[in-house]
Length: 537
Image (cartoon, rainbow, N blue to C red; front, side, top):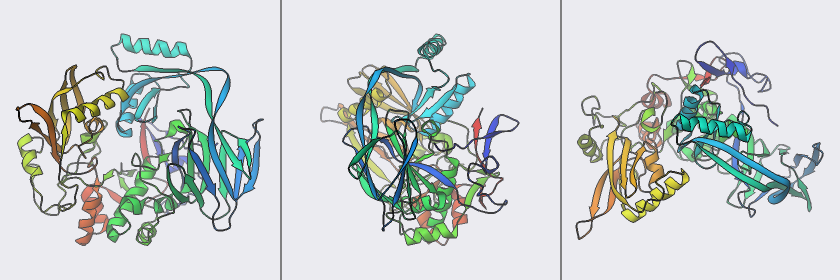
């Protein structure tokens, strides 16, 4: 089992994670302040392996290399096999006796950021929590604290008596479990934990549900919190970036845009190592974290940007910034609270995404509906002008919108999930950047209030929360649907990837690009003094 990174307490409200707390955990690799060194991180590259028995993983050595496979036998002893190839499968194994699996879901969210804020609020109420991701992000009452059926039911009853009606008990009686198996040279072995170490070359992974890819570092198969398994890539940070940068910014991005993306991607990774603490790894490999494809499709231009910025991170008051970024802002960046719940980040604020003076937010706030519509009608002079998701108009019928909403409410176990039809939809509150903060959806069962990114989770058409609604009527003048008219793709917070293309082409340096999107920040080499993140007590 890997050692976990921990925090050290200091005086005050928060716990801080800095490099000072990690020298033993990172094998003594840290140097003197100002010296940038590489760090191993743990990335879940196949997060829920075993959701179906048909899934299969084939893992192979490359270029004449061999693999050392470590596993636990039936007596719990570690055994070792040397091979060039193995296959992983999941079988359903009967349990000797029925097993109760249950936990309390305190809240359900579209994003980690809002889930973490909710977890902190529950902690302030005296309830120990953990953030999980069985599908959507959820906050659970911490399982090793509320470890008996009685404790869980007492907690739920206490919450209900205090008026908290959203928490619920997820409960199931299991008669079987998913069991990981691996096959080497025709012989099958069973083991819940598996470590795969190459000699010196990347490991090739073929998954029945995604492309064959190669990965640096080593691999581990381990159980997660959901009855399945996670394949984890233990990889040096700078090697990890080779599988991130070309896929996030594009393999042919202008060099200074690639450098800016690299600094942000490095900062993001280190800032977010806590995301999958409940499952004993650190990051995922998709858009819930950063897209990571290993070493199969690296880019010379991205590699140059990684080498040129080695060890550089973006900070604010000597703490790693919350290095959020998106594809396209739609002409204006969003503040942190426009997208998520939680404390504001001073360096994440609404900025007109243009090198020109095309709009003055101080005089014309986009919280005003008419001002917002006027802004969306503008198409020229922005960093992203001409991009296909800079402006968009997507239409949907009431029937399709109702189906979207029902699926969303069913996932959340919402009491109005049995609705039959949407009657009307209204944007009731916007932020200064124009993002939707609140939307009311009137249904035959009652009104549903959606906030921030939940709007995108509930409906298929919007590519961001930067849009307005235009009703569509049929020939009988009856409401039949809505047009979603807006701009941007993603949450719009922080750096715009396409915006950075334009600024780099104008001759802006990576430093200037990052200063534009993250005002008041500094680029510095990773060293022992930098605070990674702050955890609420």
